[in-house]
Length: 149
Image (cartoon, rainbow, N blue to C red; front, side):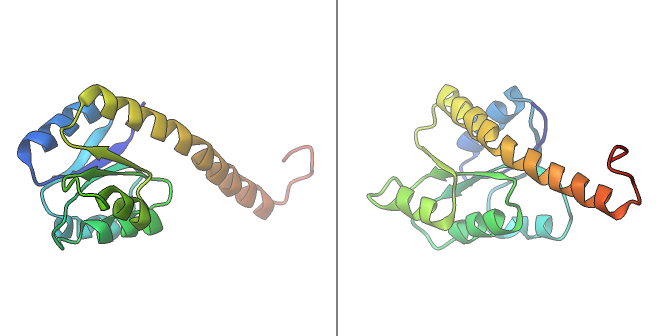
């Protein structure tokens, strides 16, 4: 499994654990930051982002906004929220913002790896359809006979 991921988690220990999980799954970590506002640059540069892991807590730090922006601007990216608040509605708020899955603290690396693997497998059919649509569009622009296409 290859691809790029971002990890936006303030807690160094949890960030290190998530980085190990991503590396074990063969994902390159292109951004490893503590705060959501530090990620703004990724929306300016086109990249094939497969996974985003964002810590969501009870403070107004922009994490839910980042989750929403990732889902809208990078629909092929699996977005996983890390519920650092662990309140009654914190996971629900992460799902409402668009997160595909939520990991709760304390982090269990084997569970995180399983959820990420399963989430990426679910995203693959959408990526294949998008790729096929691009290919079909390119073929449609060529002057080919049906058999050649």
